[in-house]
Length: 159
Image (cartoon, rainbow, N blue to C red; front, side, top):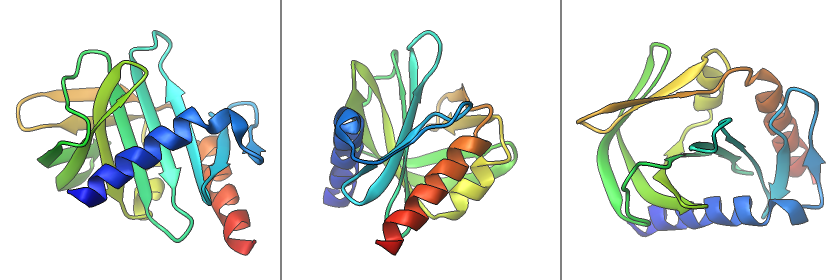
């Protein structure tokens, strides 16, 4: 449980302190990536500001994924077992998430392997299933953002 609470805290820190980052990767078509605490982070709100996706590529490997919405009722730091994420046919099952809240949006924080980025690069949406309902979040045009995230990680690891 404490591990997931730390992951949620890392998400919040990356989002809130992104503007103060010393290093930024931002190209046209990319969400933009910032270096925070030795890890590389990116986030994106949908056009209505009702959904937020956060990705953190940890320096030594692993990915933190945050998915938040305006009408979810997760509790920050609470553990949610049995979650499922589908990326256009690649499914991650029996995941555990930590509740997360950012800018009035609530959702889930997941800790995933680096292969998640490879699967994310080939999809246009992420579907989250909590055992009762499915929620689809669009993540089109991720290729440049993921390239920036990977470049950021490679450069941070080299230092």
